[in-house]
Length: 500
Image (cartoon, rainbow, N blue to C red; front, side):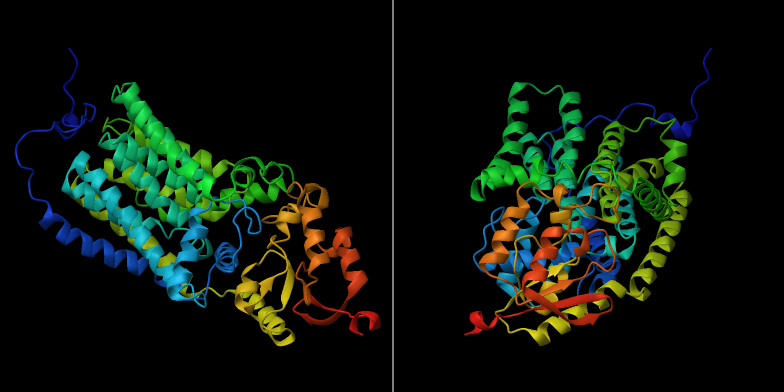
């Protein structure tokens, strides 16, 4: 005769089933959220305090700020304003600058706090529906605590992933309630924030299948998914949208080049996030392997998010933010069947780790930002406000800091050489640039030569001596006039015939 399961696990040995709808009036929820929302709001503000410490945190923020200025000046996305990203976050920056001015990223930092709070609330709603009030609080709190568990440059930037995560959480929330059209729209918005947000479609499709949905529900999901994406393509440039967001990044996504460096980065960032989740991982591993809590789609969400982190073989730290919502829900799923003291211990450990990451964010120096600011000061001193300049490097934020317009639509040397994140192997050079970029780039420089060219390669594989086309441009019309911490500034040389 089989032994009866322990009493502490009897209630979790059956799969989760959605609560049946009844005709009775729903129980009032306002007191619960009156207590929870202030807590989550305070925690969201606290965990984002380091983001206000510096003018900006990452080159992605700088790239977005420069794009927003170019769009405000009449630029066209995927034509004269280009990047390998979808349009939602550039539009968000453009709108914030239109309302609040473009001299500060403060509005975007505030929006990032709101995005993190929204994600936490949606996760709390999912957990509360499944496992009760306590699990809802746990999920929301855990998410905000682990959301800063990376290098501050990755966790505190108001960039693509932060604005993608509310959409991914909304997709699961909608699918959990069988609102398939809204779930599809949320997945589409996640994709339009960053392509890897589309990975959320996998757990949504699982929930659709498990719900026994018919053709009409599949159609609703498909329409919700395709509608926003097709609309975004239509209002930009459809061919350009397809190229820049999907088909034009083959060389960038290749694994060839600096494999050891890239793998080391990936393992390091995974270890950092694991340290931030030290309070969550033990109960998840111990409990969820033996107790069925209706969390299959959460594991699927985590797995699909891990696949998104692997995509492109770059393993930047901010990629790992996509793992945090599913990790928070898995932690809540495990802790809700353990004694209360285990939940308190897990949250306490996670809070302690969060405090260390916040201290890191507040105290760590930013040498690359200081370098960009010094170059920006030099550029500003040597040019007039309407002059265009070319910054040959991987720090587009210098354009924004200097308040000068770029001479090209290609804001980093990476787009013209395939250099990215330390990749210095055989696939760096002109022939690995974005398809068709160099003819356009040469035409831009010939039509309106920049007043200054700043070579900020500092010995990296995209230095002018390894890029013949740029080397010829410098030799034909520019002379070095200054050096700033290894960056060489070239000024345009005017011939007598041209000046006369």
